[in-house]
Length: 338
Image (cartoon, rainbow, N blue to C red; front, side, top):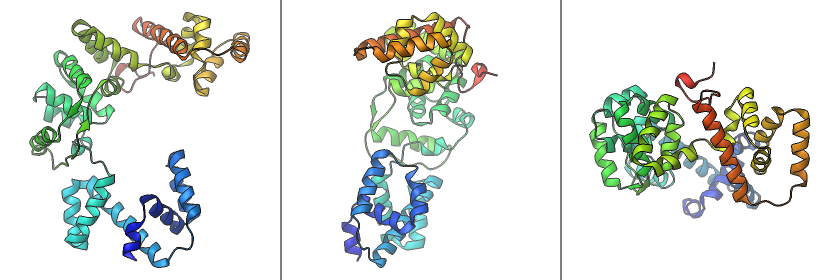
């Protein structure tokens, strides 16, 4: 029976587990899956025929052990999980569970840091080399990294932001060495065995979207002086057209007034229903009706033209924010709307 279980794919095991758990529990699980995952799992369930009760029990037991191991890892890392499982199940079975889990579970570096308060993290890393600080911030949650970056001295913020933006891949040996140093200050850690995509424009944009406006301006002002292309690329990605939903009605109305009608119509061509509804809500009935009619009869347009129109509107939003005429709600600081 164990041999048969080992020949099953992960999807087949998941299907058997869903059948064993029943419709109510399975329906709850499905709410957390993507459409593709639901389709694939549904197909496996439909293909499942009579399932041996012993096989069903083994699948449930395997799932329970894996879930338990994952919980142990989240509490204290792989070493801690291995130690607990060895005591409970013996070294061979513990090794098998950990190996099976780590093939599917990406244990990110500096996991122990993500469980710490941003102020604690700041205390531990503020005297480290800027490249080490940048590396650590890449692996923190965006809001954590934003809090730490905001609290660093102004003269080092832009340098660290630039290092994050220009970081590409970091070897596991370097990550492991940094972790070993920092874990002595905080706790044990786990090391990713693969070369990991670290930092980059997307990473620093996520961080800057969470800092207060003063910190953001300080960093971008410094970057514009020393690397204008990088600063421009970051600014392009920091606020996209779909982010207009974070503006209040008064700000949206101001953006509509300051934008060309042609740009608004083009920009809404690929916009989500939520964005369209927000814009129509803040137009006069006559203007909204006119826009809807024109959009209905509009012929094919180039995606490039739509993106350029959206960029012009985003630039208008940023100019209005810089002038203090609208406020973009951010994660913290004096930019939070009250």
